Structures are given as structure tokens and as C-alpha cells.
Length: 291
Image (cartoon, rainbow, N blue to C red; front, side):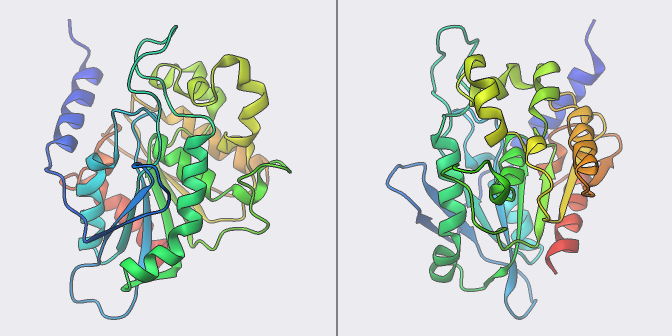
């Protein structure tokens, strides 16, 4: 007997990944590694004046087989909505299984975080050269799944533990964050087995959990003072709503309100599927912060 939830998730994933990749209008490196690159999409349409900048951080459980190509249709969708878009690549885990893992390992410590910090720091200069239609003073960061985690983390660097190499002396200049089905609370995610224990792998394994979690887990990096909205499919079985709900509760406990938009009748992947109604919900949430 098949599980209807699993069947729906597979169909949604197939639909989201069926769109052909969309080539960027420009690209720029922010480091020497091949994965240290940002693709830029110029705003489409008749709107005049500088456009808000949307920074996209892709998901894929921080694992090497999943790169930014699968979100290029989503980036193009946002550009067609009038946004300037920066699609960020970053170093992810090994392509081959390690001992004790059932597949490619999630993330690299510290390189995944090094890259997101470096990309965000380099963006103003790269945008000025590659995407002059963008207004970096109106920047919204979004990301899906593991990329949603990275989006939340990028907005919280000013509250990282003292001595962290990624800590900023002041809040980043952002209009806000729209995190899509983010892995936003590592404790709950591990309890639920999200992405096969990817959170612990990202931190370098269970031996490093207690030491590194305070520098990586968005639920530990609150309050941020940055406007934050989480968009979540209510039927998501990849990153269940309980993860987002726990993050929102942690924010409230820290004295901060995080918006939580639960999209009825959809799971994990329609949030980045340009053909899905849920993707239009995402664009509207971004617009509310950006314009």
C-alpha cells in the first residue's frame, strides 16, 4: 500500500524540478573556489527605477549533489515579478558517502558558513558591477529548506557568539528574510529525522553538536531585530511544520515576532515551483518586505 503523503511529495518534487534551468544575465565570483559564485537576474517588466534585491540561497540538505541550478526557474520567476535577483552558490558536503553515513554528507564545516558570510559581504560590490538595476538598500534574503536555514543564519550574524569569525558588529542592512520551509530549529529537526540527520552532519558530526550548534542553529540566534517571515506548506513531510513552529515559538520567547504563513494543501516543493500557486504566495511575502 502506498502512502498518499509520500506520493504527493514525489509528484510535487517532480513538478518543481521539471522546469529547465534558466541562464543568468551575469555572474560574479566572490572567491577562488568554483562554488564561490553568484548568478544575477535582472528585473523584467516595465517597472521604472531601481528594483529591490532578492538574495536566493538554495536548498538540498547542504549536500553536494544539489546545486543552485534547481532554483534558477524560481530566480527567474522573481525577476519576472520585477525583482533583481542574486542566486548564491556555496560549498556543500562531499559527493561521496562517508563512513557511518547513508549517502553524501550534509555541508562542510566551516566552509559552508564561510561562503555564505563571504557572499553576503561581497554582494554590494558585485551587485554594483553586475546588476546596476538593483537597489541593495532594499535587500530581502530568501532560501528554501537548507537554504532557508542559511537565510535565517545570514540575518543573524550580528548575534553570533562573541569571537565567531562570521559575527558582524552591527545588524546587516536587510529589509527582511522570507524563509521557505527552513530547517530553522536543529533540535526539532534532528528529533524528526529531517533529511537523514543532516543538521548533525552539517556541524561535523554528533561529537561537535553542543560546541557548534550555538553558532549555526537559527533557533539559538534570537532575537535578531530583522523582519522575518516563514512560509511553510502545511502538508510538508520533508521539513515538517513543527520545525518552523518551534522556531517561531523560540522567537516569541526571545521577545520577537516571526510571521508564519502556512500554505494549505501543499508540501515542501511548491514553494519554489513557478507554476504553483504557493510560489505566488512567496513572491507576495517578499514584496511586502521589499517594496
